[in-house]
Amino acid sequence: MSTEIVPANTASPEDIDAIFGTADAGRCRCQRFKVVGWMWRDSTLDERVDRLYEQTACGEPDAPATSGLVAYVDGEPAGWVAVEPRTAYPKLRGLRVPWTGRDEDKDDAGVWVVTCFVVRKGFRGRGLTYPLARAALDHARDSGARAVEAYPMVVPPGKHITWGETHVGVRQVFEDAGFTQVAHPTPRRVVMRVDFA
Image (cartoon, rainbow, N blue to C red):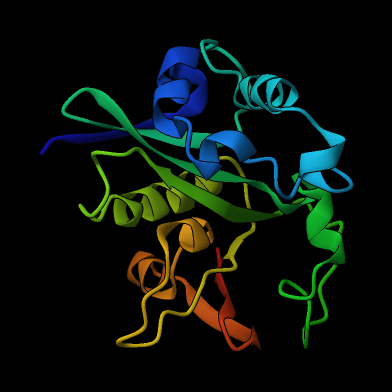
């Protein structure tokens, strides 16, 4: 299969919609760490769709920034990864996973974060999150990030985890991309990081 990964602002709104579809990821629209309050009560689907369009600047190839990358497989929109400065995610400030056991400046915009993967139905099971994670790392570095973090799931051998639980990624995907584990704040979650020289 031929895979191309591009900044989301070069994708169309229709391509974004095709990737997110109507599954849980489609309802969230990558707003879990952005909507202040309880997402399902304090925002509507239409608001989340509009916010994602605005954040990605989809359909605006000359936009100065975007909130993620889109993968095309054989020309079809197939996957998404969210990557932008950690400060773009206000709800991360109140979670224990990014911060437990670490002395981090929560307002450091030089640290970027990969928060979400979405792979379109029909394209799952092909390992698409691996090139998406590598592309997210390159995109962050090229955009001026000082470091990139991720907060993936740990999948013990022989354990089954549903696809929806792994929207944050799994540890081996980030290991493959060159991230190093810097903390293990919960049994099921780790903090992975790359610091650029």
